[in-house]
Image (tube, rainbow, N blue to C red; front, side, top):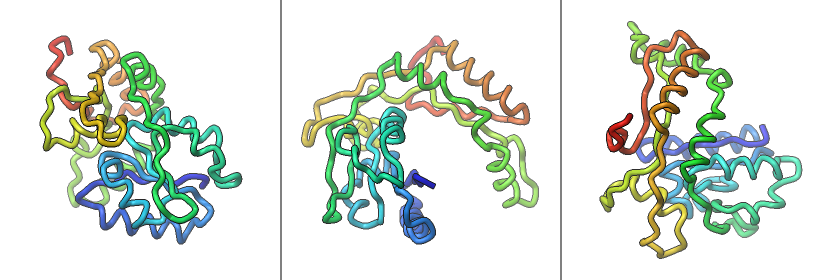
Length: 220
């Protein structure tokens, strides 16, 4: 593979680090990257503690598009410094941050959501793997597709990683006053995603809506 990506979580961090080392051992030429909330908050530590080539800060859709267009394992990361929203490993093994990325506005969030082709995701493989772990698997719980309908909560709870994740990702160091704008799918777009998911895999039993504050908008 040109790239191998990891979405780290706090509760499985030790195991995730182990997988990164295993990936490096099994596929030495691949570019290893991490992203998500946990990786964004501990990016410097990750670069120093695991054989990662880079960490994606915040929302990765546009960042990864630029990355894949200009870099691969054959040519290396020659254009990496021009891509905003990354932390990379420099030649001394130290973390180096590129320019701050930009958060998705309403138009870009809706557009990117509309591009998602559910049929390209191997949900049945994932479902079967999960089902094999249970004596009496419940398809209602296992055959699920997750859709993302919003990316931000406007409340300023200091303890909440979901609230601070995007602000932290897109602000300059120490700039805690920069606030990310709320973006979300309208009701029609949300229903379109549900319909597309069903038509891609009609054996789906549950749609999981992932949203920082879904009920904030009464029209949905």
